Amino acid sequence: MAGTDRVPTPSEITDSIGEGVSYELCQALSKVVNSEAVDSLDITFNWSRVAAAPAGTPLEVEFNREAIAIVERVSDQLKTSVYSREHVIYGLVTDLRRHPDDETGEGGRPGPPPTPQPHHLDGSSRRRLPHSSPLP
Image (tube, rainbow, N blue to C red):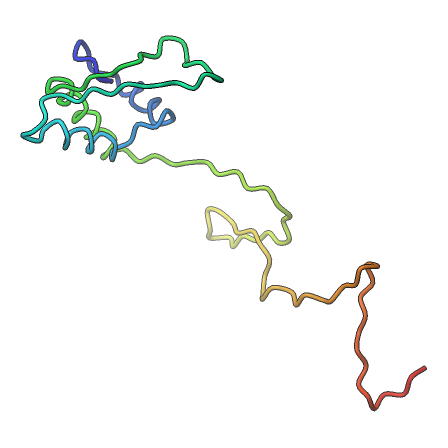
């Protein structure tokens, strides 16, 4: 994204979101490089010895004012686009419901959570009887 030779396509910008590019990142880069004290921002990467850098990954990236103009265009596109994430949740489904007028339904457990019952090491649950109760 830091190269000034071409502007990324909308599809490339969308794909870059999965790699960590965000509106906030673009704004931060723009703010740093557009400050009076900085002409360009050089970022170097030291990759882990355990896992090599992905093929074609540069070890250094420079953001100068020309590159920041492109970053700002990317930022504008990210700001105006709506992206949704898919979340996967694992667990026990105890209730599913949907009203006829709703587009989507709800899942979960209706009502208050269950009252925990005391369990002993042998797995049995025991109840305390009141003193006035006759024992069997």
